[in-house]
Length: 54
Image (cartoon, rainbow, N blue to C red):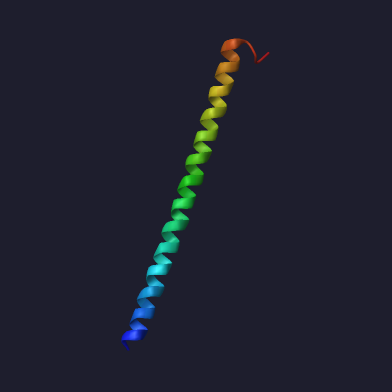
């Protein structure tokens, strides 16, 4: 009985760890996308300020 409970607990912990990893991956992808967008805006601003956008 104890062995079965340990396996169930291990399975639950592994699922929770997997969910946490997936959530972290999604958060990092969103953060990366936001950084990319801000860098593109900054690049355009520099081009406009230096007249390189013509």
